[in-house]
Amino acid sequence: MTPKRIFDITISGLGLVCTSPILVLTGLAILLYDFGSPFYIATRVGLAGRPFRMIKFRSMVLKADRSGVTSTSATDARITPVGRLVRKCKLDELVQLWNVLIGEMSLVGPRPNVPSGVAVYTAEELGLLEVKPGITDFASVIFADEGEILKGRPDPDLAYDQLIRPWKSRLGLFYVSNRSLSVDLKLILLTLLALLSRGMALKKLHLLLRRLRAPDDLVEIALRRKPLVPQPLVAPEAAATLPY
Image 1 (spheres, rainbow, N blue to C red):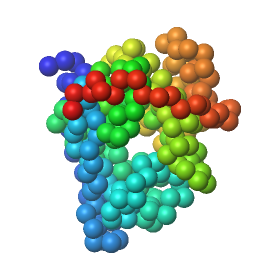
Image 2 (cartoon, rainbow, N blue to C red):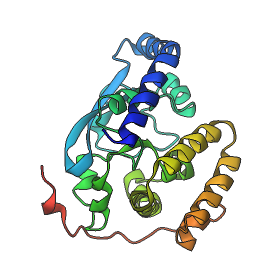
Image 3 (tube, rainbow, N blue to C red):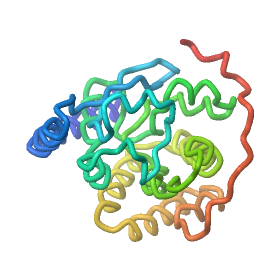
Image 4 (cartoon, rainbow, N blue to C red):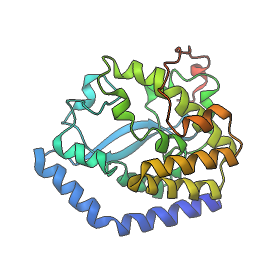
């Protein structure tokens, strides 16, 4: 068992125990709103392209995934009133500590993607599947306002692919190349700090990327001071290599 796995088991186990009152209250609030399951379980792609069932608290109306839209803006009509609070407090991802505990995810790593998203990965983006997906990473802090970025966009999926995905992929690949327990611990602390002061968390993440000698544009994007510029869509090059 690797040190990272021991770290994941220890922190996720303690996290589930310590946050159990919050988990129970969140689940009850969702259940009582519309008497539907408080959980949303969906297929995501993990290490080496293996699919797994990721769990999160449901923040949308029942059967919202049947709309065919995978990206979510802050004004998405599918989000319930309870779900808005759950998303604002980042409670929807908290239950994924279970996925970490059983070994499907890690505390830190590139966020898991849906199969249709992975199917259009470029050859370079397939490198994201070399590690277990995580609850948080560089991009999770930098793009914590993803819903606001997509707000008012006529095609949220297209806007995501042009404005956010290129940065998320590059930041994820940078993590894969520079991962360590030290980096993991710092990203966990910065994720928690972002709940209190996102501005301060972005500044410290900016410094962390600089110390890790990230490319200048990745260091700069961490501050989020400039408008996001749409990037051209890149055609997939190696989707056929996926093992599922």
